[in-house]
Image (cartoon, rainbow, N blue to C red; front, side, top):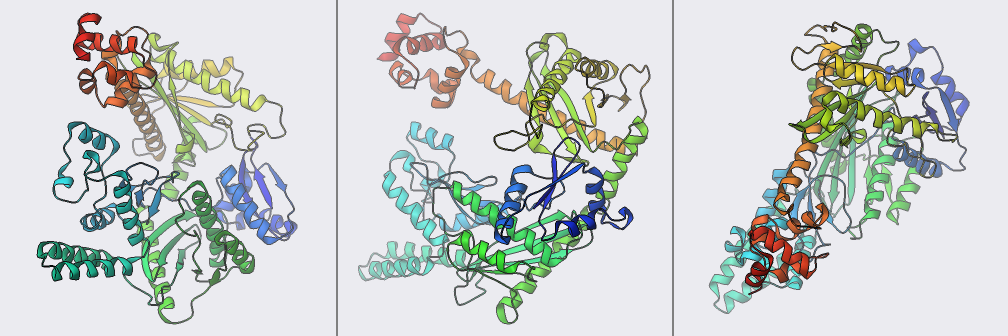
Length: 632
């Protein structure tokens, strides 16, 4: 196992090889003959480290752990993006909720999917709610209808059992949800037979209305089942994987087949850091995809079944197929087959998945035909226009947001290789310089950001910039090649002065003015005018707009919290945390005004005297008279 690090000691690539000498020789050959991304990686690397392991299975696990830990920029990453929604069932709540969800998995929640589109989940839910009338509303809606004592529309049309108003108990509602989960998990035959029996019994007992309702329920279940096409009659449990690729990129498609039905589909397009054929793509995909799925499943206390199916069908076997099979079997807890389908229905489905991968790759190419070229051109143009020594591979941008000097906040966004790196975005609440204007605010943000950078890289460590306990990069450990501030010459000069005070001389600073899109260098009386059609100006505009969006989002969040609790500002001894707790508990100030002293006193952290003070402040009358009235 080996790691490449750049000049700041950041891990930029990890890999494995049986012969380290031959692998390194392939990297440090004639640069003109290297794969473009490999060439960029080699020229960025400053050092290489290696670790000897005893088995190929151990190497697979270590490679996955390193990629997860260091997030190297040149490694292939198969990330679940937000375009693949799932159906989430919040079994960790007293009254579980069914809803569309995107994002990281949460403990105590069961997931079904992924689905290609959110509307597919809503369509399935709409069909199944008449049979399994479980809660789908948010916590706020659920609490509000409980307070007013009336169910929502779904409760009136029998698509919700209305646990908010006590039509069913928590146990009865959980039984409904568990039946729903069983149906989606594939236990369809049992459910169908049960409903058929109940329908026949109702007809025999001359309960024709109930029999008709059960008949409609059966129809809804069958329509939901039809949406999941049966491809295998033997209850096959498999993932079918296919690729389409060229020299620079690769597209992968996965069909998840459970119980003989296609339960979900996923796809990614990734950049290739080095020359990779299909067996190498299979190796990387299986290691990362199933390793991440196993890690997500380990965080969830709900048993949703093995993350690895009985079979993984791939277009070609990698060189370490036996080690991969052993590793997958360990993740599943039983034997897993990794093989290439040769004939029959599985071969036909593999060809369908391959066509999907090819189609997705073609669409991606059409959308981003000039993207890589444009990003490279933008970075090269910035280097030329601004007179930089190297192309600014990492750029940071700072923006300030406020309304007439109130709730002043700042954002710091990061672009690497011309693309947003959202995991490294930062936001700041400004206090010291908030009353002195944008120039002072910019200076404060730059000082706070780079003071942290100096502190984190100056600590005595064999690997500065990395947390000695976790090995992960620290929040401010890596400096940008270029710092962009929203503003003109004064803002750029203020940022440059702060860097000079801190002794940092290798970071370029520019300001980007909104009005005429002028680029200002520190202390220069005249701006640099970039061509309106240049990729460099377009990149700076995207960077500035993203920083503005991120700052505005944070500002609105802070302002909303302040406005929600502003009517409670006059209550003595009531801090921001307890004001927020009140609004969260009652839902709004309007509801809080209607609450009795005893109800406010029941909120954690509140006593009788504080509750009386809240009632008095909201009513605008004396504490004694209001306390008497509210308590009656």
